[in-house]
Image (cartoon, rainbow, N blue to C red; front, side, top):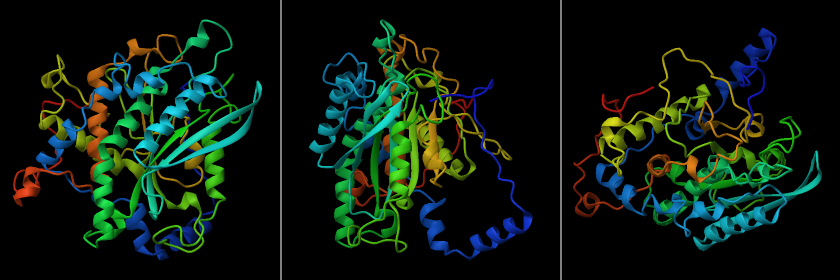
Length: 414
């Protein structure tokens, strides 16, 4: 990812349209069916009980998959130099594919050739979908390649925060939510889901190849995998009878994406995450709410990381805030195609960014564990999953159902 200009930030541009055309567009928007807005726009998310949160906190162990000292962890398998079109890149991709296929997810390897400053290169995005027949999907994404350096020792760069750790977090999430997604699909097939619109949204994980620039970040030397996939999906129409149902006839693949949630530069201690876009501010707020409730539940107490010393990962939003502007990253090609984006990226960047110091020593296990828990609860509530609880077995729903997502004094918001 890159920050262009002296402020290292690219801002969204306002289109200079005639007022008459803006009025027509506004009227047209008002005439669109409200059902589409309720499905793709802001909506109320389910709130998990304290018992359900406790289940997600403990099952599976939220540390084992992101522990670089554990040779069997997902992170250890990814934490090697892995620029595009290299043997190591293939090793990491094969590991991601095999891990998700073992969970019986639908996995596609999206191969293409891209032109780079160093000639033609082979790239492969990995697209893993829990339920390929679902009408819609929410995407959680990160890039799995590491930055290319031509000479030693820079070519030993492993990109621990950029983005080995986010990829390991995604694999941890797949393992944690897989049985809950299976249960929800069964309830949908049995006609037991109250809200079929929500239940027919699946989780899709996208591991982008070629995010990093080979030489200097430009429109053509960056986000190779994302540019390819956004263009492909926006020009690919869905074949009849491949989905349970469609909202509109003649839908393209990209039109069935509810939101793209992009992770990047995570794993170092004390990240600061901003809300970049007004249309996903509600999702940002939902993630902040999850963090607060996990804190209240005592879930962040780990080792020497005591709750009383914690600060929020998120920069508080204020009334009247506008679009913050975007950091150039894999989401931009999708943003330009109209996809709604939540960008979870540390800003400022970790101090080790694009240096050999971005290795295992840059990572903080309590921080990564905390991210795993936030993602588990956040995505469970987005997808209306139902972790098994003591209350659900005894029909006693009084323990935490009415817990309200309010701020508390102990977890300080930056």
